Amino acid sequence: MTDQTANEMESTSSMAHNGLVISQTNETLPEGVHLPIYMDNHATTPMDPRVLEAMLPYFGKIFGNAASRNHQFGWEAEQAVDLAREQVAKLIGCTPKEIIFTSGATESNNLAIKGIAEMYREKGNHIITQVTEHKAVLDTCKKLEKQGYEVTYLPVETDGLVSVEKLKAAITDKTILVTIMYANNEIGVIQPIAEIGKLCHEKGILFHTDAVQAVGKIPVNVQTDNIDVLSMTAHKIYGPKGVGMLYVRRRNPRVQITEQINGGGHERGMRSGTLNVPGIVGLGKACEIAGDEMVAETARLTELRDYLKAKFENVLDYIHVNGNMDHHLPGNLNMSFVHVEGESLLMGINDIAVSSGSACTSATLEPSYVLKALGLGDDVAHSSIRFGLGRFNNKAEVDYVSDKVITVVQHLREMSPLYEMVKEGIDLSKIEWAAH
Ligand SMILES: *Cc1c(COP(=O)(O)O)cnc(C)c1O
Image 1 (spheres, rainbow, N blue to C red):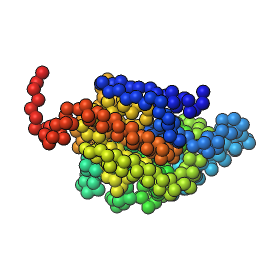
Image 2: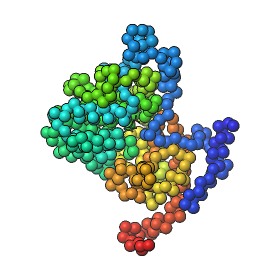
Image 3: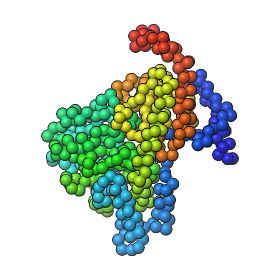
Image 4: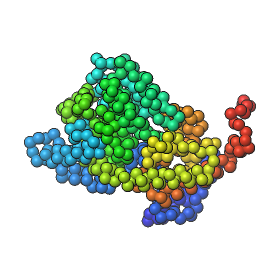
């Protein structure tokens, strides 16, 4: 079966949900569109073929342990790791010695926050973070609270940005660490990192940032941004899953971290365990490509994102963007389609991989805590979609996705008595619904 016929077969599927039936019978897909379309690049990214190519030898002939100091096999592995260390360091403006390889950003965040909390316990027990952090930061902070640490969870403004003034006011003489993410993975807002870092340095407080969504996408420099500790991961920048790193500043100030995994003393004693050489090679290559292509990629993705946004805004009413668009990641668009039932919307576009404003917890569909932190109601959060554009998306896909979403939103609204009432000017919040 050729790609083309496979696509045609997939596109003749019909979906039924809540009475909604959308058929795409015999639709011929435009050039550049293959279903399903992946537009969820904040969750993970496909590997860049150039990254895969760089990694392959290290699954085969070059299999040595980078810690084997007395033979050729070890040296070759070590050389590859050294090169990767340089590639990563170059992208964020640090020295290779300041890079600690880990299994990914979840581990990096754990190591940074727990490692600093433990090391600086004598100095104080207070940590400041904010409510829209990734769970890898929030859950780590919660764990520390159980161990006697105090954590301040700053609110965000309605545009998703954290207030530096509120941060300043939260600092006490017990504060040892501030951890604020560089860019948010749901709403794409970029926090005032350099300003926060400067404040922390003035106060003698360490500053960690979860920079997973920022590194490789926008310029990040640990010197000009005043960052002491930084987490990142390969699989969000077209590298492999299961490998990441933690930057730990060595000068002005020299940051110390208590190791969380004990063993052979790898990575300057901060993270024991035989290095994942192929993964690290992939991380390095992904960083190199991201650095080389950042300017062009940012321009291309910003244009595609703005085009997607404009298509919605030209046709649909009762929609709005979430997150400050002036401080925003190029490939992110988080949009609420008000007066549409979220689950039906997602069912209607199930040949497109995007994320919704709902998080599947054990049994129920919970609204996203990030969107709720902006002040969105549960309904609006559920009817929100995160479009995550990436390196391998094209304009034809953006057209397909926008047309499809528009069709489904219009269709759902046509069937919605609530939307009819809104159109007639009735304020839904003032209605007294009969109990039943
Ligand atoms: C994906 C992500 C993480 C987790 O990274 P892993 O390498 O998958 O553990 C942490 N923080 C943010 C902001 C992310 O988007």
